[in-house]
Length: 463
Image 1 (cartoon, rainbow, N blue to C red):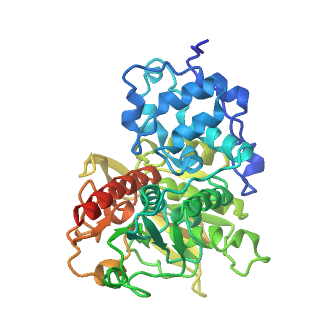
Image 2 (cartoon, rainbow, N blue to C red; image 1 turned 30 degrees about the vertical axis):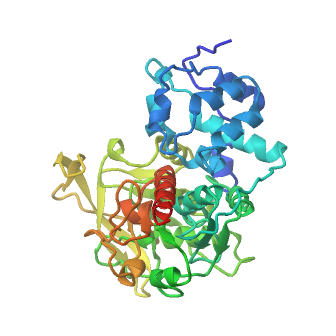
């Protein structure tokens, strides 16, 4: 029987006052009964508009129909046919601007909770089914994948399913890329990432860590070793700074460093770990994206009393997910909209002691289509902070492009590639943040999937 409720089935969550002091997952997930109830809201539209919003072409109405019928194992298998990382996507994919935005139920109410149902199917499968892997017979062809983030893992998984011998080269000591070092535990448990990576290894994917391509090996050397094609999915890990006085003071972090210390180096367990993070009483996070929300909410969990999000535009223009903003507000994060820092102040010991800001007004739209912030004269003021975290964006590390001949990049340092991942260098493909600059996990996965198909066609064309 169809569920014609205009509202999604609410998902259980930790109480904000409790979760703001721990790193356990915020959302607790649907029960079987909740999942079936929500799945019954799907109209199973003939033209499947939701699928047009999915970068990896998950057969959405089909897996939701299976959940509604209680066929949870089959629902997961349907998702996994096109999406190698369903437990991850169900948690961090911005469904509200993709598949759910296309949902017909969203016209007169809330769309079907596609992301929550995807997460349910993946979690149920991991808990109840012993995964069996049938390896595709090898075709004798070797391919290399640089980076083990969402683009690289997706590309590697798809190529392994096609029969290729795939080697993933990861610069860090642990595979997962931004899924491991960038997204906090309370949004994406690392044990889930580990399980998804183990599933890829079971397909035959080899992952070599501590391999910095451009230093340990070059792309030219990969070809010399017999790899017939290379995919670059090295992400965008080079932080952008404001370029204002005081950014070299002690107590100023890039969001990348702050989150990496917490996630990959387990600073939240200090002193059990040997990686401390100084998180003071008053913390300011500059930026308005998901990374800024992650940094602010992590600082709160590390014991900061007051955590400010300092953003130069209004809430309407914030690029962060609505859900993340909502959770941050519930946890007591203080939002300072239409505020822009122009100097970080230091004490006589070289530590941050304040942030000079100016209030902003919104003028005419800029190149991004958002109204340009304009300073309001005479509105200068100081925010009392002892830690400043800069979360205004990242760009690709220049190492690969500086050590690879014939590889075109644009003015932002991103690798130039077409929609299939083909670059200016024969046999070299690229996708994800290394091409687009910082974007979403699911878009990176879509790029990895497209590139895998193109790499297969390229290798076959060589005979």
